[in-house]
Length: 77
Image (cartoon, rainbow, N blue to C red):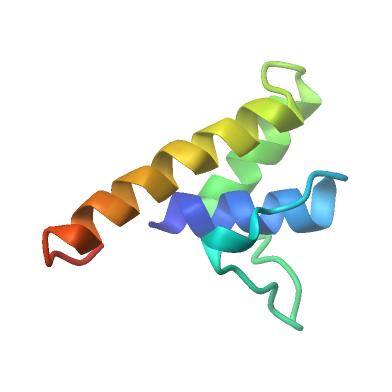
């Protein structure tokens, strides 16, 4: 789920997109983990205009659905 945390950090600190409340994400007071490969990848792809902020949000929605499925099955991510 490192990607999900990176997506939340990216959306919080790099864009104007709002993270849906149902994601239950709260930004760290320490800021984003900018050393994270996932976070760096998102910044790179956005800089190269290969993804949009909306694309990142949609990817996060897919990961949240996966998380919810795993939790309903009694599994952990």
